[in-house]
Length: 313
Length: 313
View 1 (tube, rainbow over the protein chains, first blue to last red):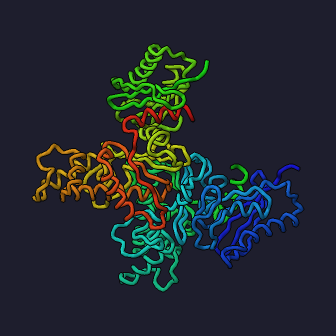
View 2 (cartoon, rainbow over the protein chains, first blue to last red; view 1 turned 30 degrees about the horizontal axis):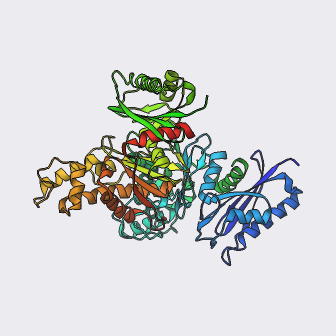
View 3 (spheres, each protein chain N blue to C red; view 1 turned 180 degrees about the horizontal axis):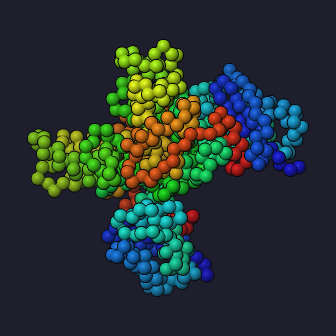
């Protein structure tokens, strides 16, 4: 029987996004299931397997018609699927790819969610056409997919792309979640933008459109667009951290382009403006010109990336 | 006729190192020729081709017995051999691999000298056994070979591994050769160690065994071994810059090990001690433990790397 379909799965801390694709990369249908992580993340993979079986029955798809499953998960894992670190899901000592393959009988390929989403943008999103590209995801934390010659660099134990923990500030007295001080994501994440804005509003008495609003990164960048002086100060700190980090990234892997995704990227081009300003400041002048683009697949990047990986790797 | 040999060539700014290898990786003979760069680097490749022809005649090696030539050169080039930047040699707008293939009729593969030397250490030196490894070369400047899953990352235009230009110091008022300020190699190169030592001896009146000596990085690190307070201060600045840079590298590509080569590495373990001290300070605490090793092939790393590349790529 001819192969016609594959599944792309994006396992999140609370919700798992599922996508049924044709082998030509057309998204036939997408849906979500809750991620049940108690106890120790055990229900997660059986729930995914179950959802796939149900969808196949519903659509009358035969086992032989399916190429397999590609997935991303919010954990660190080696290139062959062995989990090395899993805070949100609770998995311990397991090979996720192998386990899901046992549950479904299918070919399974997966990786860290940021890396898989990066491959989604590479295949169908803003990173199309670039063989060497870095997608930085700016949300609660900051991570990146480092794509060199069309492949994600995973690192020895899955730690590649942890750019949120590049040291960017020698004077930082606040401890990062990782235990360190002065990490990029202490200044360049959505969480950081909110913290910096609150701190500034407290110590600075100038008027600001941000006062009285429930603080989010969106509120800050909307205020920047209106020319709010305090919001601009926060955006400068944000841009300084991300720009300095990406200037380090270019000296290590030299991509053709940087794609900016995650919650903060929804504020639009203004985010790129502040990143580019400081990237130019810190990148070595001989570094060839790079493109800076907003991610274009939004929350679907993960399921696209999963589909790409199982179809083409 | 059976393939028996290959050539590894390390083109330097003043001298070109040549190596004749068996296909089992045994170095049969090595020798050097001057690098004639005037005009515009034109004599360089004909001289290499000529030296290879002469060695083949001398050893009675037939054309059919040679797999090809692998080379490194002190230039930036794309993965397929096109030069994007060449300060020391003077090449303009050319494909080095293609040109040398035309001159010899042989298979030719090459790349940036630091990257090729890194593959030498990977194949026969200190990096053996690591699939993901970074070799940092500390000499007049600072560069690195970024090896991920057994392959060198070249970058979009050959700029990957330019770790000497990672920004590490916000207070730096001195301009780097690249045009920027606060680059790693302004504190972490042999040149920088000499400058920092001279500056310190001038402004600090404490006694030092370095006084009256012609200053080199070796003099500084020898003084460190004797417990010289001023030399130690320089070593701390050196270690801070390299350690901070490698902490950024680990967050981008996460190698298993760092190999330290180049002139400064000849000072021995004391160099690693200062690098490791500051790497631990700046790397995120969750970063898995990494090995730090001295390069072991010395000046032969380039010819070994060339041989590896033409034999196995």
